[in-house]
Length: 329
Image (cartoon, rainbow, N blue to C red; front, side):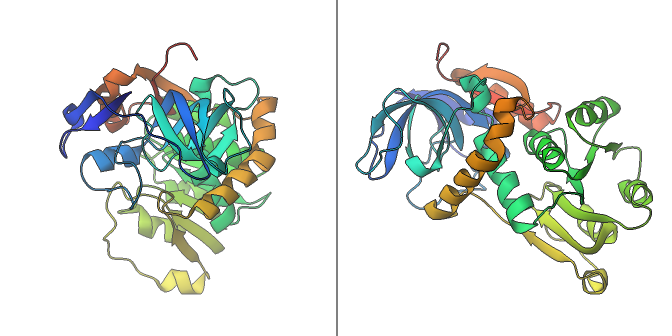
């Protein structure tokens, strides 16, 4: 099979198309013939040598795919050969075939192409586990999404809106503000020109925000604490501006805040299966109704993975970046 290899830690140029041995599914796994794979920021970190795969995971990049089931490992029985699926992988997605635990596979929602379905798993699993499981976002609460124009952001905005939250977001630029508002954000702020703490405190009449999803870190950490409402929950899933900062924790105590965060890749198969089940029962019906759609920023052939990484690093895109592995699915 063809796959993308990382020659050495470094920039996008280290990504090389190679030929390798097709994996075989082990117990409880299915072999997926990949039609498309999602590109995510952890892929860039792994390429740079800053995010090694957990023990037993494929060293090949790629945390989400969509395609058709090619073969079944022993104990796999839900899907049949030829069934269309999308899947959260443990690695190996930038390839023509990947083995995935069957419990991390979901049926492709009706009305979506395989390329669109490839944009669902990583972001949907991440948002559900952090925003709804860990932070417990409820209908009627306020929800702030930092970085609303990215893959995680466009997913979080739509999911927050679907489940009845009042959604705020921060993005860079007026055009991205308008796009996020069309996706369901009640208010979008250009962080380059406005202080989002003041804007959203005014929007909530001084009460603050119930749940904050942050992938920026750095100076946002203290600002999030200032902005959070009493009993607020702040979830960090990345630290693009750094994770080591000086913070005054007095407001954490006074406002009874919960500061939390998580990574997804190292979690157990059982945890991921539970999240998959929740997504299928709670979110998939909205996808099939057309109320939630993955936003595709760009598509690249597998051989042009380096260009896909360059676009992600530019932060000029809105939504998900997809690698097209098989032209006709």
